[in-house]
Amino acid sequence: MNQILKPISDKLNQAMWALIFNGAILVILAVFITWNVFIMQLLIGLVVLVVAFSFFYGAHKLHVIKKMINKF
Image 1 (cartoon, rainbow, N blue to C red):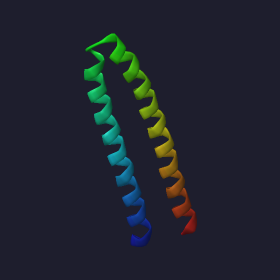
Image 2 (image 1 turned 120 degrees about the vertical axis):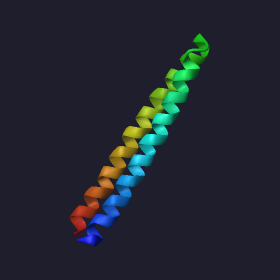
Image 3 (image 1 turned 180 degrees about the vertical axis):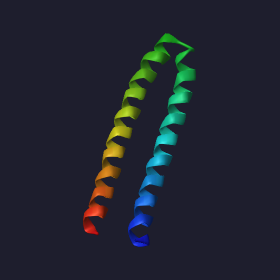
Image 4 (image 1 turned 120 degrees about the horizontal axis):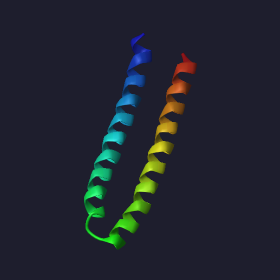
């Protein structure tokens, strides 16, 4: 049972750190948005890219966990 739970726990920890990193980036971007209209336009585009990356990353992690469960 430990052999199954340890890899799943590791993958969940990786996903957690990725979400924390993306959240920190979004907080920094929120501060920058208040400065200038041009910066706001650039950063909104960057936010869209960060959100898209987090969706792809989350889908990849879920796929890896699914493969691990199917293996056991």
